[in-house]
Image 1 (cartoon, rainbow, N blue to C red):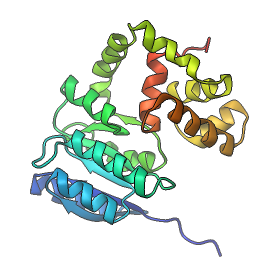
Image 2: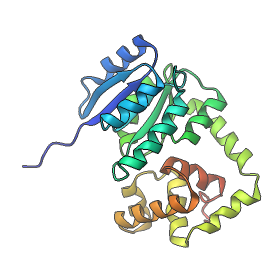
Image 3: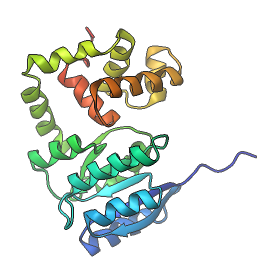
Length: 230
């Protein structure tokens, strides 16, 4: 008999107790999701995320101790050092749709950005997606993200970085940047093995000096790798 799928271990990081309670009530009876802990500040978010082997962190942007972006960056940095074989995803769940917050969160390594007031109905699917390494974005913040792509894409030195990658790595990054976010989807799209996709993504991350696949996808868009000509 096949063993049941492993439950996704979730940490809620928000300084508003009512918000934490509401998110827990929403998730407590969802199949294959387990809320392991709640924290009210960024420092505790880092500690608990690492100690409890969390799969997905729901991260507010404004918290005491460390901001959501700072906590995200620190969680991902320390996690790579202690357990690089296991993935952890940070999904921002906040009230703020400010352009600076969105790009700051994504630059820190967050895999997605949702708004409490508009995207609560997407949360469960977003957690499932984040646990698979797939990016999630609120429709309300797509415009500032695209605006930032255009602003950063103006540098020829940035575009020239695409030559760092082999042709095979560019194809994988191009698929990722075009919206094919899962390893399985990229493998099917390119007719290669999942092992090949994983290997080429890891190599591309190392060559570009980026921290995770979300940042790599954004990098690919800035370098025009998401266009058919790539």
